Image 1 (cartoon, helix red, strand yellow):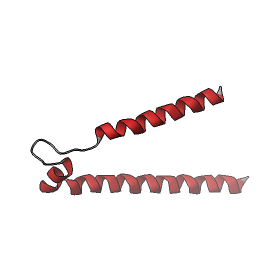
Image 2 (tube, rainbow, N blue to C red):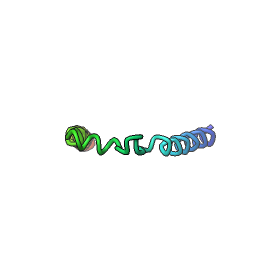
Image 3 (tube, rainbow, N blue to C red):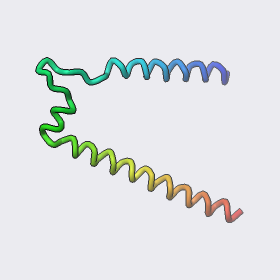
Length: 76
């Protein structure tokens, strides 16, 4: 059972990675890519700020959980 699960997971991951190539950003007919468009409208900074905020919140959450687990382990 575990072997079949590993095989299915491996096939799923390979399929997802292969499909990323299809989603690559190419040039539009006007020759402008999405990142050029975002930079021209200064929206790239908004996107990067949101990504950084999400990353910082996730890291702080993980640190908080680690501290709680450490306290629980010390109690035992």
